[in-house]
Structures are given as structure tokens and as C-alpha cells.
Amino acid sequence: VSITTLDEVFLLVARGGKAEKSESFKSSQQLNAVAEGTDDAEKSARSRMDLDKEGLFGTHVKSLFRKRAAYFRRDKKAWCCTTILPSIFVLMGFVIFKIQEGDNNYPSVTLDIDKFNGGIEDPQNPVVFNTAPSNYTCQPGNCVYFSELDVPETDETYFFCGSQASVDDSCSITYSDDMIEFIGEPATPEPAEVSNTKESSMWLDDSRDQYPASQYGAVFYTHDNSSVLESNSSVLYSDFVEEECQSNPGDYVDPSTVCPRFGGVGYTISYNYTALHVSPLFQGYADEAIVRNYLGDDSFSAAVVIDPLPITKVESGFGAAEDATATWLLVVLSFPFICGAYGSFVVSERESKAKHLQTVAGVKPSAYWFSTFLWDTMNYQFPCWITIMLMYAFDITVLTTTNRDANSGVIVLILLYGPAAASFSYCVSFMFKNAALCSLFIIVFGFLVAMGGPLAIFILVILGNEDPSNKKDNLIFAADFLSWALRPFPPFCLGNGLLNVINIDAWEYLEGDDNISAWSETILLADVLFLLAESVVYLFLAMQLDIWSSNPRAVSYWNGFVSVLTCKCF
Image (cartoon, rainbow, N blue to C red; front, side, top):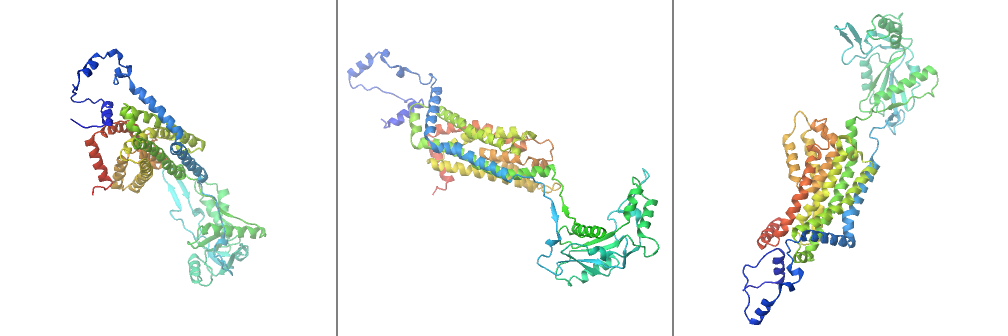
């Protein structure tokens, strides 16, 4: 004799169970006569139906699918979590990308001496120069490397730094005062009696406390149009250097064009290295003063403008990846909301006993989970294709470019995320009895894994390859281990694949592979394969977990495992 409930009987019948023994009651012959006289033809068609051979799997899937559609029409929260909210977050990310996207080339910079010594007057920017009449070393500079190069194989000679017209002498200076007075404000000329670079340096050092303002530059004229050599006052400097150049011009040089350039006015700039770009700035002021003196017009002006070189292809790729980081962040933030809706629905079905009634009615776990999977996969297509269309509408180049097959890889990655995330959410749902808590856990966990995991791995790889000649294998191993350990979670695969595609130029540099593409294992191939496998494996795992959930021993083991995870052992 055993005591049972009607629910247990229904569950046993629905799962194909049979009583071990069955005995008939013999309380009256009348009952036996009635039972024996019953005609099989009078049985209803439903009672004669072989539930295992009538193809009810397809019928149950269709019915459950229609039920989900009706439920979805009434459930505004599902609309919000699976379609509206993810699309809004993605839209925000793309808008932020377009706002901050710009030309990564550095703008030109106009240098201005007025920015030095602000708030100091009389003089704001003292400019020391060698006063006239005086003498100064004609050519005080020296080549840093070499001044002359002979190539015996071709019998050629090349000169550098004007060494083909070198002069080891001093030149008379006559017009330094006339030229320097044309220097523009707020520069103030300050005379100095010096004759070479050593004396000039000592003068600047001795006079550093003479002015309240810092001295950022000085102009020392080395020769002018009337300069003569100190060793021979009858020889003009310009004539001497031109003759020197004509006698030994070197190869590939036109003496008639090049040699006259060594004459004229020459000067050297002494500068304070604490000021940014001060050397070209004072050179511009010195040139401006020379031209004004020549024209006799102090209205002439010359601006010193620095135009940086355009960024390289690698720098452009790094800049585009940096601009797209905010977009990536909002994408990985929005998609876990979809998973949360998947998990919360199945928990709410168990919470309201709807799942129990469907099981009693004969719905197999395979039919229930397959229909749920089909609906969630179909419903995922809305946010999925909205995201893809927005990518192209906002021209997110790092994601839509055909270069390195980035566009095909991103589209496949996004398409596979939905089915994998749905199956994963079903498995996670068995840990919860409250739909709200399940949804919250899946959303928070998905965001943390999708954002924190890829960032941590990328940082470890960069630190490990910081010095190519001395790679840190422990950091690289940690990055590889972490990536494989987190790939069983679909949100990580999505975040990791997108981040790698965005930073594919950095991966090209780190891997040293010019042929790297989006379908390389390092970028997203492994993530795509994992998502494809997870879509199937997790779905069958959810079916098996549902079957085990009716086994008291399995339920006991599972409750103990959950207690350990949630620290409820004591």
C-alpha cells in the first residue's frame, strides 16, 4: 500500500513511467462484469492514442511557440529588455563614436613669443645680441656626424653642413644693431660684447639674474654683407666662401647656384631648452628682423608655424580603435539585457507552475526547450539586425570595413551570440527560483564578463609584449589561460571578438603577422566556434537538467551545490 498524489501520477504518466505492479480489486462481481463487458470499440479515440508514436513533438513545439507569441504581445517588459533597450544603448554608442570621431592628425601650431614670461614687463622677453662694431666667429657651428664623405667605389665626394666653403676665421660685424632693432615686440634687444660662442654662453650665464624675466633665446650675428676676415681685412667674407665653394663643390652640385648662398647675413641662435619650440621661434624673429631691415619697413611680419607630419597608417588604426572603444562598451552593456529576458521567462514559468502544468499535459522537456529556443532565436533577430544596420548607417569603419574581413566576422559573431546566450541562460535559470533575481544575475554577470575579461586579457598581452626582445611569458600565458577559461560564457565571446576586431591593427603589431585577419584564431575565430558549439551543447544540457530536476536525488545534490556556492552551508 502506498500513498501518492494525483500530480505525481500525472508526472509519472507524462514521462512514460509505469507502475511496477497492478492488482485488481475484487469487491464485487458486478464490477468485474461491467469491466469484462466493456467493448473496446466504445473507447474514445483519445484514450486509444499512442502518445509516443503520434508525432506530438511537433504539435507541442508549435503550440508552445504560439503561446510565447501571445505572451510576448502582452509582455511590455520583454519588448524593453530584448529589443528596445539594447537598440537604444547601441544607438547611444554609435552617436558617441560619431561625435568624438575626427581627424587624428595634429593641427598646426603658430609659435608666439608673447606666450613667454606673461605678466612681466620691461623687458618681457630680453633678446641678447652681439653689438657692433665687433668681430665674431664666421662659422661657429660643427657637423654632428661628419662634414665630408668620399665614396671610393664611385669616385664621388659629398659635403655636409656647408663644409665645402668652410672658414676658420672671425668676421667683422657692422649692422647687427641696425637689424636687431627691427625685431618685433614683445622681444627687447639687449646688447652684449662677445666674439665667439664661449663668450656668448658665459654672458648669458652671468646675466641670468640681470632681468626679472627668463631669457629664452639670443641672436648672435656671425657675418653680414660687409663682413671682412679678421686675418685679412681686404677680403670680403662673401667673396672668400664663394671662391672656396667654386674650387671644391662636390658631386651633384651646381656651383653657380649653390655657392653664392654662403654669403649674405649669418647668425646663430642660443636658446633655453626649457621653452618649447624656442629655437625655430627665435629663428623666425631673426629672419623677420633681417627682412624688415632690408625693406626698411617694420610692418612686414613672418609667422612661425609648425605643421606636424600626417599620422601613419598604424597610428590611424590605433586612433580609430580608441574612438570605437565607447561604442564597444555600450554594445557589451546592452546585449546582456537580452539574455536576462531569456532566463527570467523560464524561471517565471516554473514560479507560476505553468511549466508544471505543461509537463503534466504531456509536454516533453525536448519540446519545451526547443520551442523556447526557437522563439528566443527568432526574437533575437530584431536587436541583432538593428545593431548591424546601425553599424552601417553610422559608418563604424572598424566594424564594417572589408579590410581583413572585419565586416563578415563581426556579423557572424553577432548572429551567433543570440542562440548561444539563450541556451546558456536556460542552464543558469535552474539556479534560481525568482525571475527578477535570475534576470539581474545574468545581466550583471554578462556585462562584467563581456567587459572585464577582454580588457584584462588585452592589457596582459600588451604588458607581456611591451619589450619585443624580452617578452614576459608569464603575462602572455596568463592572458591565454584566461581567454580559454572564459570562452564557455557567450557574453565573453561577444566582447572579446568585437574588441579584437576593433584593435586588429594592434594585434598585427603584437603578433608580427601582416596577414592577420578577423578570422584568425587570435581575433575571433575561436570565439565564433565556441558560440556555435554553445548554442547546441547548452540547449541539450538544459533539457537534461530539466529531466534531472524531477529526480529527488539529483535535486538534493544540486541544492547542496547551490548552498555551497551561496555560502548557505551553515
